[in-house]
Amino acid sequence: MALIETSSTSDFSGAACRGSDVDLYHPSDRQRPQPETLAGCARCGVRLDCLAVALRAEDPQARSGWYGGFGPEDRDAIAALLPLPRDEALSDRVRTARRLVDDGWLINDVAELLGCSRRTVQRYLR
Image (cartoon, rainbow, N blue to C red; front, side, top):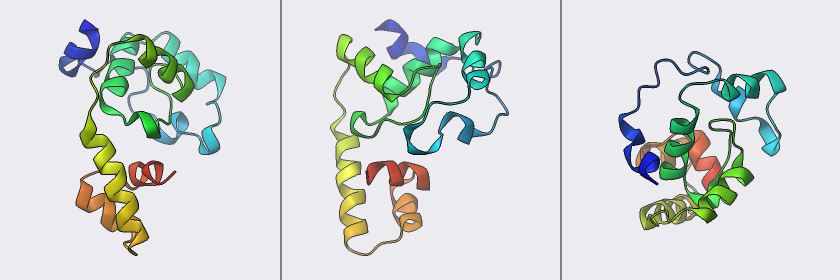
């Protein structure tokens, strides 16, 4: 639990994925990344910090991508074992994104309003 609470001060400059294409860790249709991509995670010095950031920041209802070599289902299982605080603001963001899109807003406009990426809004809509 301490790692999750303190990892915001971690130095990710030496991360194995630094400079890599983000899409390598977010393949379409919840597929597993290529083995060589995940091999970089296995030997990364900030692997657990990466996992902790994801567990702390992502919406549990919209998990996607691979962090620290752990996929969405892995993080679901890990989160179930940890006393993680519930962040209702994330759920509010999901509801807001869905409502705005239902009202005819474009995904880019929703992302700008919520201060997140287009990809995040698309995950909220799943």
